[in-house]
Length: 330
Image (cartoon, rainbow, N blue to C red; front, side, top):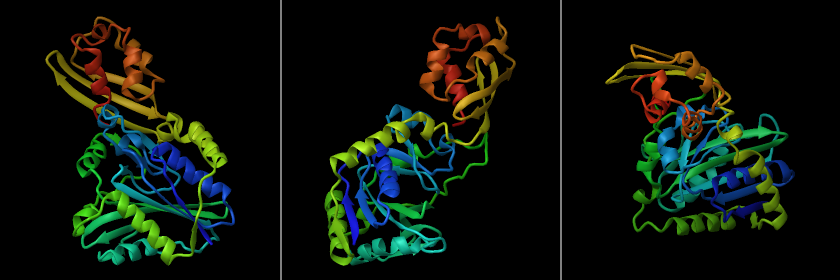
């Protein structure tokens, strides 16, 4: 019989760690899990975090960026999303299609009166609108497939968080494919709350599927928190695991044009060069050298530049303007 976990936690780094814990430690058992995340951006395992998000927007709004185990594109989560996970033993060649995992979810949505169907490579749609995307992975004789149901998500926030400027960025990472998305609540008459929707989904699985409830023990939670601490809560996994990439950013200031060329490796600046018709009172190469090895994030750049006479290297520029230039293409 399949174990059904109604996960009460909403911290995204914990929930991704919980998926990994169940994936690796519940061998011999099929597990389903329903869960929700606080506002967050969840990126695919093979993606460049910097190429998928508006870095300033997620930083200013304290939106964490978490890398998951599965491939595919970036998604925005908030408490208006209901997420589902299916984990089971796996043999090569079995259940290679996303459709098998999406089938029970589609059945539930049709039971609610929606003409839901599996579409394309890994989406669930109603009409022409995407309401769910799925992703999966397999390792060690186990498979994990999961997806997110857009129920009453903040679609404006979603669009702002997932809005990078890719014109001047060069890398070979997997890019997210943008689709027209829609909230399920907009498609229902007398739509229930997201909490009631999640409860109905749980009741559907309990009634229609061969499942029994499994409650996380204290030892389960403790083990998950350790995985979170060592992996999903760390910048090294969420950002440094991004593929190497390069980009350039150029801006015309009152004092001249400044052109920044940047190489990034393991989430840190590996090389940086400044060009333009600006004036310098100190060798610009010294500024370039001091920025190497810094994490490509506003806080780290600000700490490094706070004690430097930035305007001596590029006459007229402030530390904030320089940081905005460096981050201008991501």
